[in-house]
Image 1: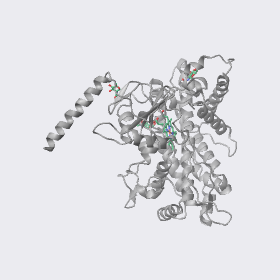
Image 2: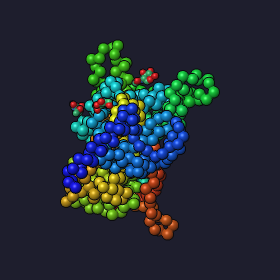
Image 3: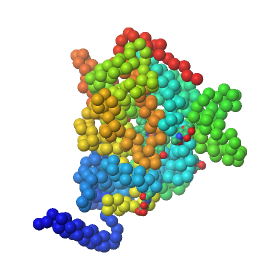
Image 4: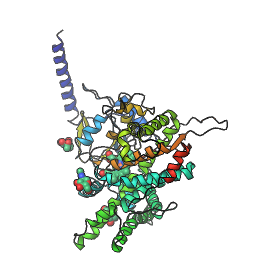
Length: 526
Ligand code: HEM
Ligand SMILES: *[C@@H]1O[C@H](CO)[C@@H](O)[C@H](O)[C@H]1NC(C)=O
Ligand SMILES: *[C@@H]1O[C@H](CO)[C@@H](O)[C@H](O)[C@H]1NC(C)=O
Ligand SMILES: *[C@@H]1O[C@H](CO)[C@@H](O)[C@H](O)[C@H]1NC(C)=O
């Protein structure tokens, strides 16, 4: 039979099939497919795993998420439902780009979390703000000071903190987990408020850590029923079962202090004329001509926008840096090759700086592989939709919760062969970064208009810390009682942010010379 005719007949049959479906479904398209569920309303509530959901979602995407007609994109879109809420999981970069980027005005909202936003004072953070003008103003203000050109100004402070980190490691290498946390906190406080934090028990860092802790508790949709059933927020405080409201009142106070204390410090310095350059200072200076009646409102935006650098930047970059230590302790060959590159590009007479970056493609590749190998935010941050829409013939009801499966995109074996192995060289070709290999930033920082606005700042922090540590230290797996290296495993926690579970590693100076460079490496920055 003539192949063209065959195609024609097939096309006609296909159209008839769709026409029939369309008419019979009362012109309502099917919802994206998912695993079978039998109990109404509860639906998949007990099938969604509590650990590493992204792995199961990826499996389901591959099983159920095939498009039902001719254009087959395996793993594109699938959905589950639990307690009346529909969750739609986008399993490929194409689906994420099609919805989050190309149709960003429909898919850039966030689900409402009343415990976090309304009760616990978490609404200082525009990361959870509904899509609209307030979000847009805050994001714009933030972007102005964190955009790709602007972040170059923060390099001296990031370098200073990276050098201080090397010194802290020399004193207490076993505490690297805490030291990473302290260093990131100190960097952000310095860049955002020009606050020099104390080595131990810093009041600002402690308050910030406390505030972030409450935020992640309050944002947990399963821990607080009010996040699922918003009307619960109206029950009075004295009512049995209303502990969550009293809890929220305490958290509101913590959030308030976290957001206002450092800004008050900057205002005080301004009054005294001793304020040093910082993001908060610039934001406040912009308010010079704002009329008095608008001032309080505008100052609150400044406080919120400044605070979010800690809120969005600390825990995420900390996770990536701990993954870096884990990867190095597991892969001595990578440490060795990185060191060879550093020795030839930088030499052994000084420590690396940002100017060396273009001569350090292997270090750059390590940073990319860290972001890919253990995705910090495996399901990015949820988006929700403001309108009914449809995709690939599926109906996407308004108010659905959308996950972009960043982990699946970063572990697609077609794009990254042997996706579970840590191999920086996958990003290199002839000694340079290969632009043909998909860059992890396409998914590691989320999607569309909500994509992480701190990604350039974070890339700088990661690069300078990784390069400095590898130039100065050897990182190895710990030994067992017979003096043999223990086989470390990459075990990650479950949550919006995924961290390596606590592990040990040996961190020692590479040489006497390296130790001397660390001791002398301190930098002063105005
Ligand atoms: C390894 C480092 C980081 C990772 C993996 C990361 C990841 C993400 C992700 C996945 C989102 C949500 C995007 C979406 O909704 O699709 C996000 C949002 C955000 N991030 Fe980051 N981030 C990192 C570092 C930072 C840093 C250093 C800052 C600040 C200096 C920052 C500030 C923010 C803010 C303000 C938002 C909210 C954006 C919005 O809702 O409009 N992040 N980040
Ligand atoms: C946060 O919510 C409180 C109480 O609902 C409100 O008074 C405040 O103005 C909100 N803050 C922002 C920045 O929207
Ligand atoms: C980046 O920041 C600078 C300085 O604040 C600003 O002048 C510039 O307009 C910003 N660029 C973008 C693309 O927003
Ligand atoms: C949003 O959804 C509506 C309804 O399906 C659709 O017509 C519109 O094109 C979508 N908007 C964008 C920006 O894609």
